[in-house]
Image (cartoon, rainbow, N blue to C red; front, side, top):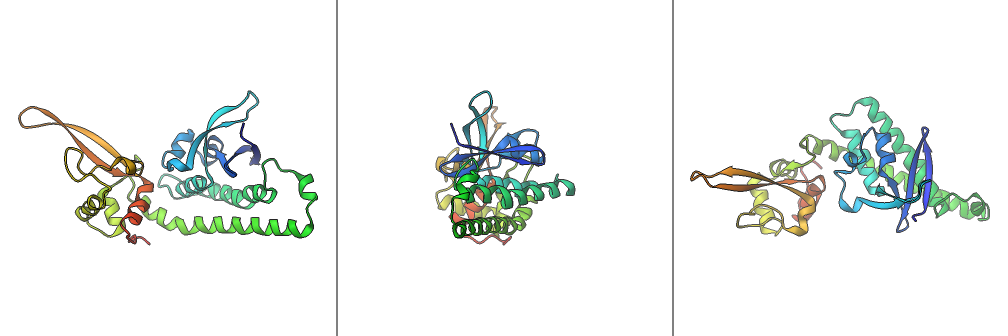
Length: 253
């Protein structure tokens, strides 16, 4: 059973579990506060290492639930604040929740150094150590909020290119990083990211598949035979992956 902390935000439970010593948030709790009807909709654009299924204690026993990491939470917060379909009222709600997480939840978890707040344990610490722990927690919260603010302009700019399915075309990514579409295809093939020849040309190798989405389309040849074409699209995580892999500086920076 995972160690569990339950926080209260505006009358709602926000559950966190301990995963390798780090707080992970129950996705359903966060999604409800951010205005998603289904947690999977919120988590769809998160990387695989930012979401997982974990046993979470409930009154009826442990249940497998989708949880998201601290990094995944911050990404979900940014996406919700910058989404094209999100109004100003929702953005204000998300920002208030973000501040609560960075100023209350994370400092509480890190100040105690454990799950399940233990006032007695804190009371036994020397006052100098308590002050040091509080200062460290405040600094982490400030750094986390600063990272969110720095990332927001990039996410807002990327949002202009994203399609309804949450992915980008290769052409859109090329514009983001200052290349032509053909040049980007060339670079990705030459760097061993995309397959260079054959029926699967311009689709990613398996080790890079998590950063892309490949869609298959059936078509009819002039002789009546049917064939399949493949279109490669880029996941949100793939934009920065491509920049790093090709050692490029994004035009949006």
